[in-house]
Image (cartoon, rainbow, N blue to C red; front, side, top):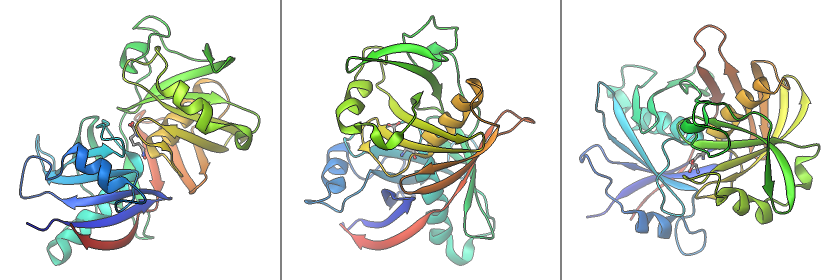
Length: 279
Ligand SMILES: N[C@H](CCC[C@H](N)C(=O)O)C(=O)O
């Protein structure tokens, strides 16, 4: 049976989206995802995202496989693409602009904006070491500007979970970071039992930062939505940022807000359809 897919990207963080509404299990395996994400022998993507039937009162369920076949709890750029993809699937039957999506990180709500951007309620950040998870500090403590030895250097790291785990460090020049060398050493560091997404942040001003990322299970990507959210939270916790800021990624900017009212994180950015195909 042929499997249709649609290629989307969010600021160059690109995904293969699959209409999985007819089954409660992904129609592709993690091994197939690895093959399909390969940029020479496959379609090429940072991950594969499945639009599954909703559960727990959700409109849909999202599952995602990273390009290494691992399954993360959430994906920020990916869920903006999923929102756009669902709207396209529903076509003339679409009767709303926002969807409640059940994910392993909880209920996440992308909203299609009039200007074509997608605004996502990313939920509450988790700050306790036990929630990241990390062994840096005891389970009930926050990890803010803690020293961590990686690649022969001592980095000051702040850890935040958006459902998936992030480690943020502030540097003077993100362009000078040898990501391909130190990224894997952060990702596989024993302090992170579930591995880790690592964000390097250069603070240009309190409402504008530059970010580069080494993603768990995907390596260097052009953007990371959950990482941008986690970085804004780390910026506030360390006194570097205001609660609303632009996060400039290699693929482009995201607007992130850590709401004073409901403490939830809101992310606004694009989602771009590239092409459809069949497997
Ligand atoms: N590689 C990430 C998942 C994708 C997150 C990123 N692409 C985003 O936009 O949030 C992880 O294993 O946690």
